[in-house]
Length: 285
Image (cartoon, rainbow, N blue to C red):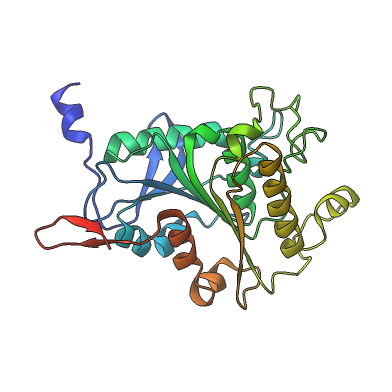
């Protein structure tokens, strides 16, 4: 590696949400936050927006938590004109592959910050929650832990149903193979606001309603139950859990401000926060 490359590596400014474009694809933007302790060896959390595409807002709202926990935060932006099917990873003929794009962003951020990206942590809200749980099911060896909130519907661990309803291989996503014995080993926490029962903006088909229920609360509970039953069938400890957020409806802003979503997500993924010790070091509380 040249001296110029060495100088550039691990050089992102800390304590500020930065907008960047992917070097390999200048049309692809993402937001990144590096805590004051720096990124070298830090965990890496990817947070994924819903259809409102509020990537910057997610990065800003989670930045204080990233600082507190010593985590490098990445928030990709998946514009609708390129990623019309990002919630389902990006099936052939329906848009750019969002999972492949995310891998490129993670690789770049790890190079720029020194963050640990062998396994990443993931959070997604609404449409982003759809993408995140499907990414973890498709690429479980790359994922250390998952938290999702307010997903509209889910991919069930059912080999009889073709993706995205189940894990049977799809001709529109031929490079992805779902292995329950792998993805059932990924810790996942599913959050839903207790008042998130509106049908507005929610996928409503006879097939989805019959398989999963009619509200986000019902669908989350049914999916968690199916994942736990599948784990038991494979002789694995069930690592998928359900948590309801008091008073919350379907609003990321409301859940962050009044539903303790940020606290609950980071506690589920990372446990007790890092605290800064005198002299610039840090250790676990």
